[in-house]
Length: 147
Image (cartoon, rainbow, N blue to C red; front, side):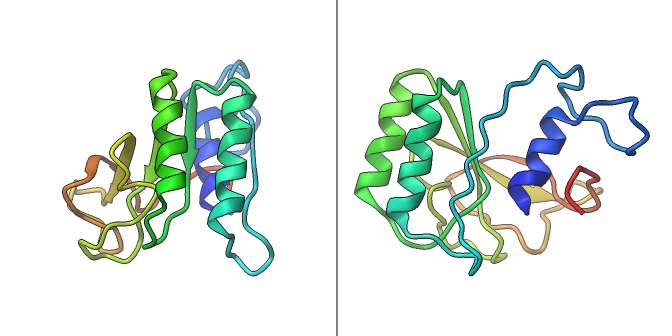
């Protein structure tokens, strides 16, 4: 899903006739992939926190979370704040409902919240927009390793 897409955008190796090249395309990126969703496409917050803590324990410098929901969790916010205070950049998708509703983890204060824009640099219709969004990235027609 979206996590695979982002991983490909970061680290897809060029020159292999696959049609995409990541921003770190020399094979030197070290990715620690943690899948927290089950077959149903959902996960308990405790499972997501466990996956997040696994990334911290593995020595991550950056943690990307291509997930979100409307429920605030003080426990999750604390885990993210602790990681941030250790110098870990935490990034999350702002959300995909196309509203100003806050989505978590993107709306926690220590998270870089990423909204989506189209090729004209206009807000992608499905992207969340609120006062917690820090940056926008292309969200329409982006090729990557996920099909």
